[in-house]
Amino acid sequence: MEVRCYHCAGVQTVRDDIFGNHEKINISCSKCGKTFQVINPKLATFHAEATRRTVPSITSELSIEGLPLSLPQDREISLKVLDGLEKGTVYPVHKPRLTIGRANSDVIVNDQLSSRVHCSIEVCNRTIVLRDLESTNGTFVNDEPIQTAKLENGSTFRIGAHSFQVVVTSKGA
Image (cartoon, rainbow, N blue to C red; front, side, top):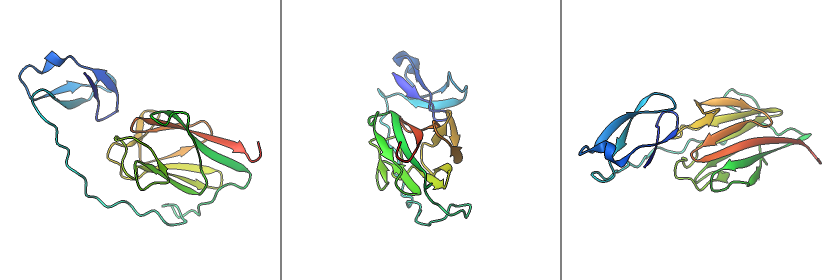
């Protein structure tokens, strides 16, 4: 069966007989080397606790740093889905703060590994910032978890099973 590391989201295959009679085992990730727990699906049923956190409020026209958010006048920004169920879809960034998640977001992805409101793209003229919004499974740039990261044309990021690429073009091109 395939398992995903909690730390780096790397996927690896484990043999079914590795569990023996144990309900849970700890294994080391072949990618990052950290240890994580795997539950034997034949002996245990996994029950995830529902999170009852409130969705972060993100209605301000200012970034957390206090900078005014605005789209560039001479450029168009879009997000292209590289991996995931929506592969090939292009989402135009039509406002200076765009949220991405599986519900209650501007861009909705069909991905159970993403949070309802997972992350945001904030544009301050020509500066593009990706911000994780306290998501459960994290937002990744270059396979590293981030809280905030500056992006540019061609930059890629991942939430859940979806990878996105930032595309910046001149208006009218």
